[in-house]
Length: 151
Figure 1 (tube, rainbow, N blue to C red):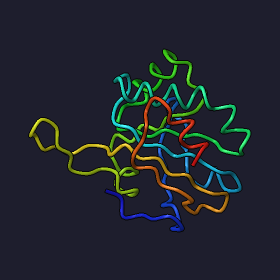
Figure 2 (figure 1 turned 90 degrees about the vertical axis):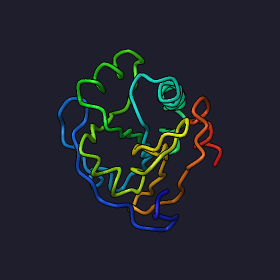
Figure 3 (figure 1 turned 90 degrees about the horizontal axis):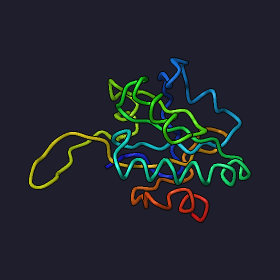
Figure 4 (figure 1 turned 45 degrees about the vertical axis):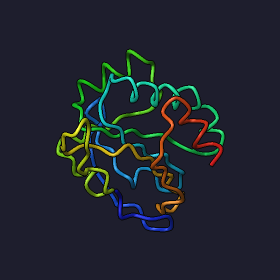
């Protein structure tokens, strides 16, 4: 679980998006950001979450938010995922898990009695000054866009 809390300064980061562009938190200075961490491209829950954010994207933009996804998948994987589901926002390839670790979402997980390291599905709402205004740990994948808007 993340050690970060509402009101904390969001950890700065730098990573490459699906097109190989360097993306930094500082690129969003003066803008609100939905920074969401998800485990894997093209899996059922992650696809539902991404499509919910895609469908809510105009409403999120109307509230002043940009959207940025982060997973350990490669740039190539992200390119295919974006094309397949027509996602209007960038995805960062955090293959070294440095961004996930900075945000405290790279952690031990359990599934069917097996313990492994993975991404804890988490969304951070970051304000225009780079402070965390909300952390969503109980993500409703099929309605995540609505969940963000309502919270």
